[in-house]
Amino acid sequence: MRLGFAVSVLGRPRQKSHDGRRWPNQPHLSVSLLYLRDILEYLREQRIHMYRMSPQLAPYLAHPDLPQFHTQIDECAAELEFVGRLAASYGVRLSFHATPYTALSAADPRLVDKSVADLAGWARILDQLGAGPEAVVVLHLGGAYGDAPASKGRFVERCLALPAAVRRRLALENDDSTYGLADVLDVANQTGLPVVFDYLHFMNYNPEGIGLAEALASVWRTWPAGVHPKLHVSSPRTEWRSERAPAVAPPQWTEHADFVNPFEFIALARAFPAGREADVMLESKAKDLAVLRLRADLKRYAPELGKRVE
Image (cartoon, rainbow, N blue to C red; front, side, top):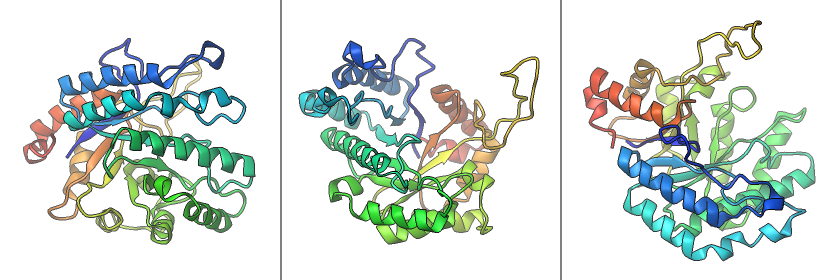
């Protein structure tokens, strides 16, 4: 079982995840790949084998009004190959997560065109890195736009129209308010895409009342043989929200906590289908620090699981 985190590295405070300069300063994928190389070295030091790259790794790659940024992947062919070999040699599973503005089900055709261009760019980066079939771009079905079944139908139609090279890199994720696991499994059945199970979303939104064991077994069946399913795990935040001090508000259970509750994680891992394994992306605010803490907690509270973590 690989444990991973997304984008920001807190254990190395000055480490950048991508070239975040604004477009007049000419940001570039080549700079982001230098940062990614350094992150991979940090992952090797900490024995972390899973990492979600920033969706802005190639800045403005598909921006319709900035064509000067559209050739970055071609310009960085050698650098992408080098970083991909490095990730493979360190055993790191790489992935992307689409932005909230990536919506194949949208009613606005301009947003759909931009979404298709973004997905194609992320898929091509993974291909140029030489990543295996486990490296996916995770995306949601999108909004309901006043008619959830119709929106779901648009997603399926547009997904099937994508080039095969793009579609084979995609994976679907259940959300916490609109499209639960049953909806996502239905779309997966129609499109052939694998499903990334988000545990916190499932706990927040499961209108069909699917049991956890049944849910996990259904998700496992969507992944091809030889590829570990990818799960997203986080614990709900329990602290008072005080961002607007002196006013405070109770937490929303959809909010991610800084760390993962180890007892929740142990119960989830013990519900995996018998003899099957998965790779788990922690969506905790403490990022890599949450991975290190959970790894230590598993060794203490569930040694049999601690031994399964790479």
